Image (cartoon, rainbow, N blue to C red):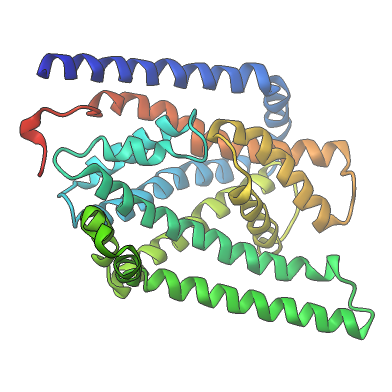
Length: 340
């Protein structure tokens, strides 16, 4: 049985390797106009502060990944001791697996299969808590961006429109407060699940109790890391906009970026296909901001180039790096490694 498990592990790892290379090749050389992107980069290489801004953007990549590693390591400490290096490898492996699976499902699979002893379903649920914190952060910044864009959608000329805007702003504030409160008190979900499921709870108790492991302070820490991480990759996007000669202030950029990420979070997509979706959503958001539809060809090209560069840096590059750690994933364990 051990030999069979080893064979299955090798086959799955090889399949991941093939799929990752295939999707990267298709995305970069078939679906996306790489030559146009390279021309956009060539056009701005001699611009002011190009080297400095580019170096900062690249240096923020490991910061982004380390923050996600720290968050996952913190969540996993309830199940199994994971070193920072191990968590970093798990994050990269997760990105690699996620590139050809819908809605970043691979993030969970790539991470939990690097664990040696922990129950994988429990680890997946704990990992989902971390993803919920990141999604909550995206929603909070996105809703703030919606408030910023409201005057562009609802003219403040009439009293009725002003009341409608005030009502929407108040609703957004209430929804944000409720979402934060619900996340910080997520342990209550275990209690609710127990009261709803009745006798069936015994079958799912092992997994439902995962949500009760983390108190308000711990969940706040996870949310804080998610917010810092959001600010890091948003700063990357802002700096890339400046590199591609899109002159926009930081606060205004954060509103547009927040709106882009909010839309991205509700569009079902495979991580790899996000390069096209990201460009389209970015064009829509910047069109609203500048009040120009359609945008000029030069501005459109610069916006797509900036969003594509961010995709290449934060998804394609880590996905390729994660291939080195795919061979550490254990999809099938020997019985002696199981925890019962």
